Each structure stands twice: as structure tokens, then as C-alpha cells.
Image (cartoon, rainbow, N blue to C red; front, side, top):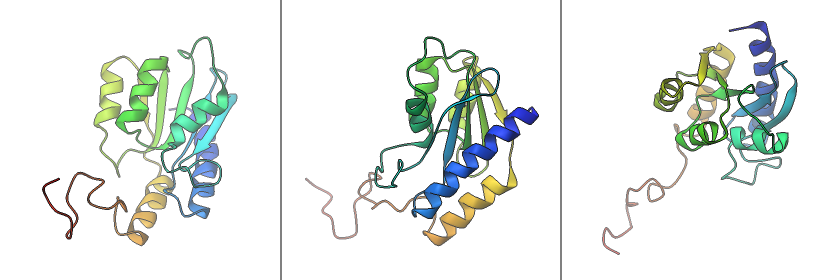
Length: 161
């Protein structure tokens, strides 16, 4: 962990705050160059909060534009990446993933990245943890998706199709 990681995390937290202001899951991310320059940043839900499939990490990479080489970049995110975003990290060859909150979500994907040679840094930043737990308590837990989206039938939904 470096002071640079903490500074970049503050930018990611700003993105998470912007998502939170729109009522979206408060996750923010930054893709930075080897010298700490912010190449791109993003938040869950996209710029206006309506793109529910937009993840903060993918938004940050998209904002950075296409690079010839990602191996010396760092992806700094307020929460442990999901499997989708971890797959993107592996596919692009991002060299380092820095996580603000690795407590509130399973860190199996982060371990997978580490085992594949990606440098991983768990900051366990209390403000990231509290931002998520506050949001989760206001929204009934981690998921606000209907049970059917999670692969479980809703109470009134038939089990057969």
C-alpha cells in the first residue's frame, strides 16, 4: 500500500458518492497509470445512475479509452470486484487491483486475481465499508433485485415454465 493508492481511493470514493447521490449502489473506481495519473474513473450505474448493468470498474476502464498495455496500470475500487470485473482485469492484463472494502463482499474473485499474478492490495478503508453497509441497511441488504433475478422464484411465480 502506498500513499498514491490512498489518494486514488479518494477519487474512487468521490465516484461512489456520486452514485450514492443518485440512489445507486455506492461503488466507484479509477484506472491509473504507473505514475498515479488518473486515466479514467467511473461509478456503478453510469453517469446518470440509470445504467444498472454498468459496473464502476468497467466504467473506469471505458473512460480511460483503449490502451496498448494495461500491465502497469492500477484499478482502484471502493469494493472488491465481482467476477465479471475480475474477468475484465485478467483479460486486459491490469497489473494491480486496489480495494477499499474487501469485507462486505466475497473476496474470492480478488484471491483468483492474486493467484493469477495480479498484485492485489486490500486497504479495508472504514469509509468504504461504512458507505456500503449504510447503503445496504437502507435498501434491505445487499440485493434489491427481485428473487427471480437471483435464480429463486418469487412468492407468486410458478416454479415450472
